[in-house]
Image (cartoon, rainbow, N blue to C red; front, side, top):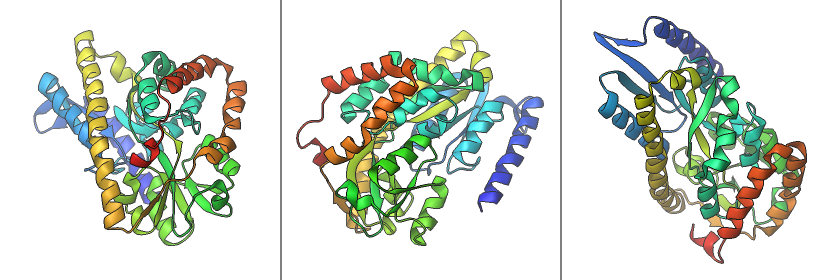
Length: 348
């Protein structure tokens, strides 16, 4: 199945590039330029809802020139495939995990650090600060794409098939799926688990067949992707708050006239706003469904031992990438302004 998907993505890339050469027309007498956006979430996911709002907004403002098409559920290939398609201009935008973008720019390593943000309030405030995000978002321009907005993906936590995770020691001997990033692999090593990188689309089968013992993600993975049908323990260790990133092809963005570019910028702001509103509702619904329909038990461990195991990664990263220290310190200022409140973890 993975080979079929990858072949389809390559074939699609060739087809889309051919379409761009012939004028990006949608055919049938419609001479509008097609704008293609890909992502890996289901149609009822906050990301897709936000991108449909973007589609509606752009077409309401520039519908005589552009026809926006949103492709959910990895229809254009895996996230890595879609990033490569965006690089080449075969598609115009895609949503990619920050962990994948780490392989294109070392600056994204910062957002992958476990326990970088003290609270969700600090996370949101930092991500809304352009002084923090611009140096990172613009660092992939030489690769042919840049970030245009961030998308809230909540907190990442461990969930397991049969072993409740209440301390790092509970992870020892467990094979845990992580995103394909060096930072995530090191995090699991420090916490005592066995990191098993794999594409998100392969996780359900791996859990079901017991190739892995668990994974780490937000609550939506339990319901939208069915992982709660197999994993019965979800532990709020809150090890990461990693944004998803909407990236755009640089050539497409740079060629937009100033007036159109401002309309697109407003559309990007709309994506962020709608997704965040939908995210809050979706998480509440996912927790209720997971607990009541799938039989998932939610665990609220003391996160201090997890933090202590991972904090040396902060020092090591700053030694390796000293240029990121000013941004790191700006984030720490938000952490001081928005510390985690007593009891806050239990009510999220």
